[in-house]
Image 1 (cartoon, rainbow, N blue to C red):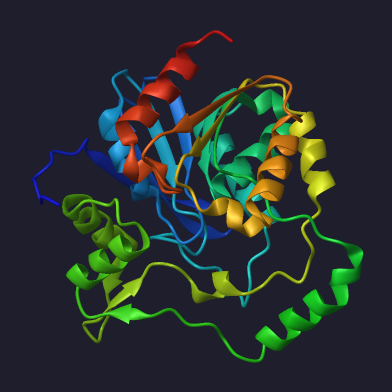
Image 2 (tube, rainbow, N blue to C red; image 1 turned 90 degrees about the vertical axis):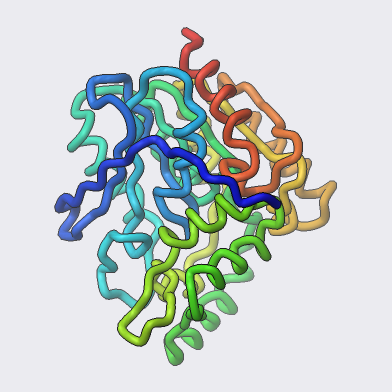
Length: 301
């Protein structure tokens, strides 16, 4: 892969107090333009959307937070994270930047799960929803509860850790190992936002290891689907042809059937498949993704 230079859309970094945390938020574009809120996934950062922002043709104000304990947002110093806190953080973010407004909300993976829940919980606050492989988790049964609680208790006895790296170049290689489609230039850019050098000179991932803790609570798919059913905004559902996310849902055919079942809970949904892209579609095909979202956001529905 070639390592060509690229001029990126300028980004403004802002820190603000949200729910007793010092939250880091990135802004791109004209502050007076229509807003798009972009929510990153697990073990990712807001800067991950840079390539999509670079590909936008219209006049937009893109706002993307680093979730609590990721990127430059402070960790709340906890031994595990609770999913509802992301919903509280999102509402505080929208109250700050778009009070009393219905917003365009995009989420990838974990961010897609947060966005899709919020769109059904607060339907009046979401103008249009873009869900990038925010499938949810596998179906669970009550009988799994004792083992899940035991797993969580066991994990509390040993704090999780994250590997460090000798250099930014080593971080970039780690990103390319996970996503072979990632060019040298994009991997080098992401490496310096995904990790930072510590006092010992080694590069540490900008993510709290506590995010690796298992949840003691089972995923309740029908509760999530009740939120999806309550969504009134038009939805753009985007998957990647070469994604590996279905593997968390079981055998491929079983996973496909379950994902399709969940999508049908949306009253107004447009489904798209991105070619030559894996789960990190905003890295693999940012131009194609930008075209899709601008066409969708510009459509009156």
